[in-house]
Length: 81
Image (cartoon, rainbow, N blue to C red; front, side, top):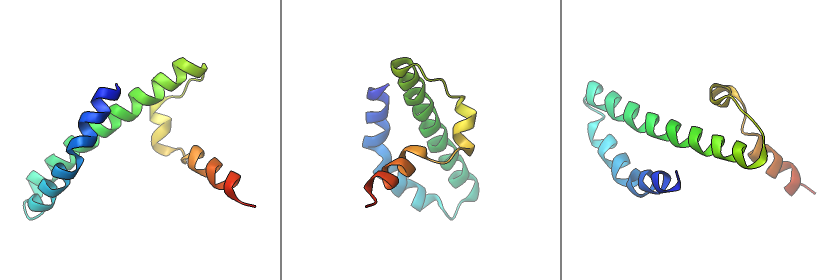
């Protein structure tokens, strides 16, 4: 799982540049966005499932799409005086 994350992370810059060059071609641009989006969703689901295995929580991956980022919210609350 972390190896897959590393692979996506190492290619995100070149994929972004490629997407920028594809913007004039709607079909190719949409395909590239879809591919990257799927890869990121798969990584996110895998990371969330593994976290659940470690701490016993269970979260429906579909719920992630509509849920606010509670960890970022928690960090913000903790950092306020």
